[in-house]
Image 1 (spheres, rainbow, N blue to C red):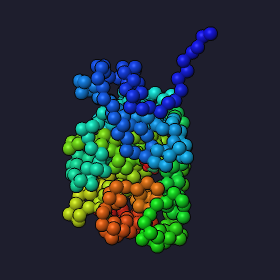
Image 2 (image 1 turned 90 degrees about the vertical axis):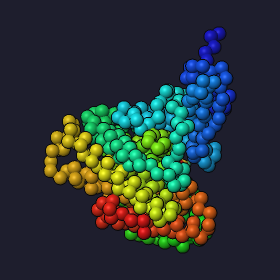
Image 3 (image 1 turned 90 degrees about the horizontal axis):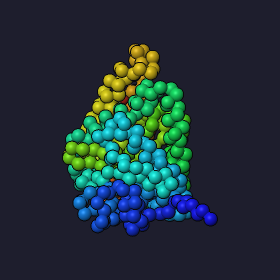
Image 4 (image 1 turned 135 degrees about the vertical axis):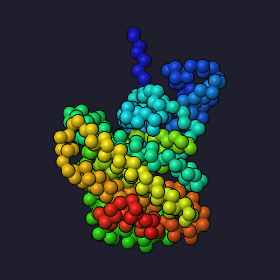
Length: 389
Ligand code: SR1
Ligand code: MG
């Protein structure tokens, strides 16, 4: 009988990750290799494998459930394929801002990538009061190029529709729909907050003005297929050194609203700003204004050369697109700030504040800021008018 080897999904261990890398030839010299599981995110296994020549790779495997909750929360492993494709797309436009992708294995839900061990997670860097002068330039450029060239302004209609289909990502979008746009605004079991915030949280749950605006933003997230967005661009999805920036982890990528990534990035910078000393706060706000300036200037120059949309020549069209992008990004930022404060997935910037009174005070400020960004997004015309309190 002809027995054929049928590979099936298996969760990697440090031993099998080494075998995988050796079998596939990702590390040339691999007699003596060391492997460590270094994943500290909510969803995946991440192995770092290094050989005797100090060459190394990262093997990232999607688990069939959300690691943060456990096997009771099943989750598609197709997200690894989405992540691989998104990294591939980003590297076509901004190779300098993403890790090199060496290979994707859809069956085992693995991406093998460049090791960025000499980089630091941006969230950690900011919490250590680090200063990253090139960050706004890098993120602004990354956003302008990846968003523009995946949109109807930079990509032919048929190709764009194909790409929309390629990046349909319902399970990961559902996480965002629930955790960012719904649960924090209702008494949901997934919420997680200190008792001292109960009154503030109930005020949110019973605020019809706020909830109407959140409903409009959620609708945008559900329906506006503007561009290929990263989908989870918080400061834990960005690696930095003094002069280099790499965007990682685009497993939530899908065709969504143009302001979504911008808003998530702003929100996580603002959450950090709330947690640091006053002298640093203005520097954090400058990250936002410079990123917006670079994004809008770069997007505008790409617009000028658009070959696919005749209406780009119409006066004030670009201005209108940028105005709505700015407003939406503030609204999305507000939702992200609120969910990172009272929802399921928190941020270390706030949770690591040791003094309980200070932590509660800062979290209340975060809720107020989130509310203001959502409800006043149309009357904050530019980054200069953006304030923390
Ligand atoms: C169950 S996943 C929780 C969060 O982690 C991811 O990074 C996303 O931000 C998601 O909302
Ligand atoms: Mg992630």
